[in-house]
Amino acid sequence: MKEQGFFSSVYGLSFIGAAVYFIQHSTTFWAGVLGVIKAAVWPAMLMYKVFELLKM
Image (tube, rainbow, N blue to C red; front, side):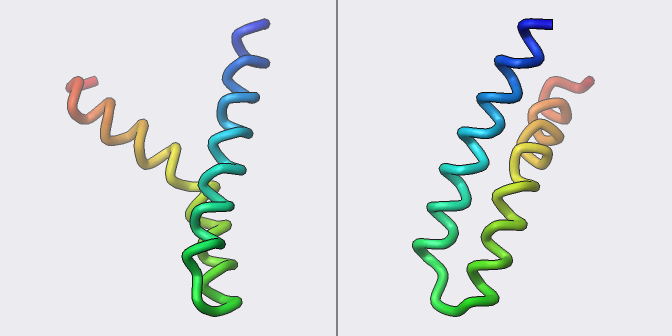
């Protein structure tokens, strides 16, 4: 189960980095809220596209 901890930490760091990026580029409060939601969802969208390219 060590792999699960590794991937959880990678996802956590990715989420924090994406959230900071989206919040820094937001111009309103609601754009910042949307940025946090995007930060939580973008890894799933990325993996979907990777699997689509790999024909899995």
